[in-house]
Amino acid sequence: MPVRYLFAALLLFAAPSSFAQDAPVEPGQTFTGRVVEVTDGDTFDVRRSIGGAVTIRLRGVDAPESAQSYGTAATRAARQYVGGKSVQVSVEEIGRYGRAVARMEVQGAGLGAMLIRRGLAWHYRQYAPGETEYARLER
Image (cartoon, rainbow, N blue to C red; front, side, top):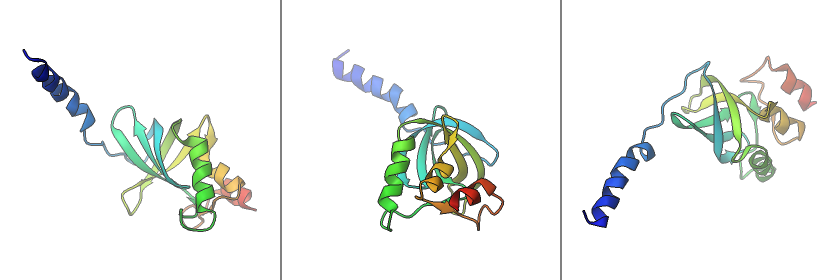
C-alpha cells in the first residue's frame, strides 16, 4: 500500500475525534476542563476531557468588555489566572445567548471573587442578588 493511502487512512480514523460535535451542558452539571480561550473578563471557552468545548459566562459577575475602560486589564488578569489551566465549573443555568452561566474555580479559588477583589469586575446584582460574597468584596 502506498504511503499516501496509509496517511489518508490514518486521517480518516483520527477525524471523528477532531470533528465531534460539542455535547451540551445542563444546569446543575459540574465538570473539570481546561480554559482554551479567554474572550473577556467574564467569558471563557473551556474544553472538557469528554464532550468538547463549552462557552462559560461567569455567574453574578460583570467585567468590562475588551473595548471599554479596564477591559484589557480585566481580560489580561483573567487570562493570567485561568488561561490554559484546569478549572472546575458548576453550571447554574443556560443564558439567553446559549452560554452556560456558571461559577468557575481554579485550585479551589473562585475567579469571580478574584476579579471583583482586584476591582476588575463588579457584582452583577440583577442576575445574582443573593451573592453576599460578591457584594461584600465590591465595597
